[in-house]
Length: 374
Image (cartoon, rainbow, N blue to C red; front, side, top):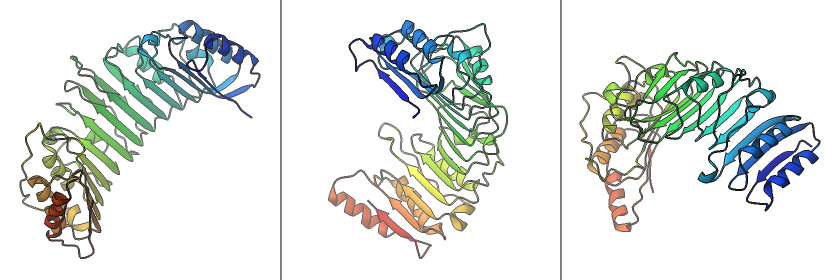
């Protein structure tokens, strides 16, 4: 049986000694998973010793995660970049990567996760990723002081990409992406001075989630017009993508209503998505401290609302005027609608009953539409 070795330094008093002996005693030629959960009892020297010992076997998955801020100075040994040729999955959390003079090589690596990792600089990131020739999945959560201004991802084989940066950086930090084989793409950032440049279109894209605070969205959406499932939260819909772009394959759309312009974003994407079948308005973000958006009745009904929309969902319903207008608009125009689901966080039974009565009076164009309220 191929072993899975998980070492947690909270579990042992003499943790380094235990790991030393355990790795030496294991004689299996293949280790499926080698997982280090490190805190105050271990450090960079231990990691170097342990990885050199592990190199003597074939390791399929390597996980190094630091579970406390005091241990965040753990440096990943240089041997990791060159001697784990059979590594398929690598997950690093709160560690430091150092520059190397020898070529970086991960010829078998398919999954890579980098959470709060510190790098030598922009060039190192690009070099490391470009030497992952069969990489299919990349997950990145950046920290404020990771020494990277432009995070470059140029990986032709990549199929899944997740990028997150949740600090208000006072710099123009962003991403450059060249991954034409992507099928899933998620980007989440709150830096309004940031950017994302996509160098090639993504014709294989199936799912995308774009939740960014950029003032300039670049060409993100124009490069994923083949997407089938799309989640959006952006502040300026008029700059979201070029006029004339059509999301001809889009069947599921989710709008996060964090930004006050979400109504304009909704109507624009509806007009440009002729085959949409499912629409979700996710209101988990509170609008209490922001001006309520103003509904403006469109001069024409988007084609998808009339001919293809089958399901509609709105979460955290509060009974606000713009919510009622959107629901009414969908119900009275969606000829193919099968189900409309409205949910609320309200716990007052009288208020909920009032909401239900109001919603039940809305005209429904589809005779088979079921209205569910919870």
